[in-house]
Length: 357
Image 1 (tube, rainbow, N blue to C red):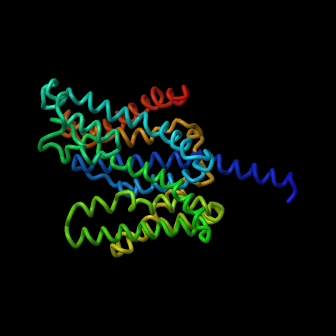
Image 2 (image 1 turned 60 degrees about the vertical axis):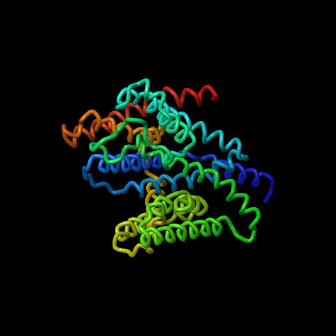
Image 3 (image 1 turned 30 degrees about the horizontal axis):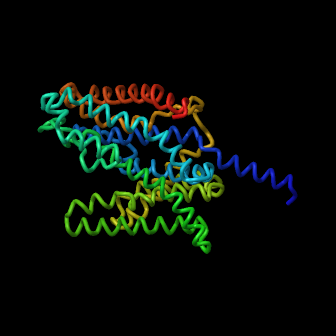
């Protein structure tokens, strides 16, 4: 290969790594966010709304997209510090906003007097736990969303995934370091090993939960090690992107067939098939060569919608909107969530990024 050819190959590789915007991927993010919102509306209100993806599948789909994007993202930045800063600029502004605004704003609807509310240890515990991505330690605020009207008193049941998301992000530099140590294994095979270990982890804790009934095993099976399979299937798809694109429709159909058949499989087979089927569907739809022109921009608010909807649902129950009917409650949730997400995305996140914070 001469120098000119080498330069072209290098530029082509750099262009491939720099491409991180796929319009259909933005569309899939909206679909997955809507799936989670509908699932939480149904869970907290008792409604039933059919949708192609369950909440767990939608979260897995998000992780698959992250896995596809984060490997080239890390390579492009070149070191862990720059990579972490870039992720923090995207993740932290809306996350901090929703934690602090709920902590302050919900003092107005607490059963406690405002003075008692702000002196409560529960308020400090909520802020500390949620700002450190440990939502499960203290998910509720003092005197807020208590009583028979609420299925669960948590202020924001969506935040549990954020610690998993961060751990998945930081697994990428660990994966790259491990691949440099284990030179006998290609990235493809190393990703497959991680996927297999994640599936074994989920199988183990599923068996423990089924045999003991201890809820801690049910919680542990969906934590970081149980979600690695989705993330690394997404990364594996990035590694074999040319093959994936050449067989896009076959893979999409295979994924859909697998998803349809999952309920008829044994529990063991469900856990094995699910990360591959869901990731195949989400990534195939994300990479379709046909896209919607209006999505050719960077102002995607699906992440903010994911973060904000849960307290908005709880607030709707507090307002008594369930008595108005399912249509009104659902419309309130989607309209309020979308409006707040757009305001925060433009007014806080984009402002901070433009000003280099």
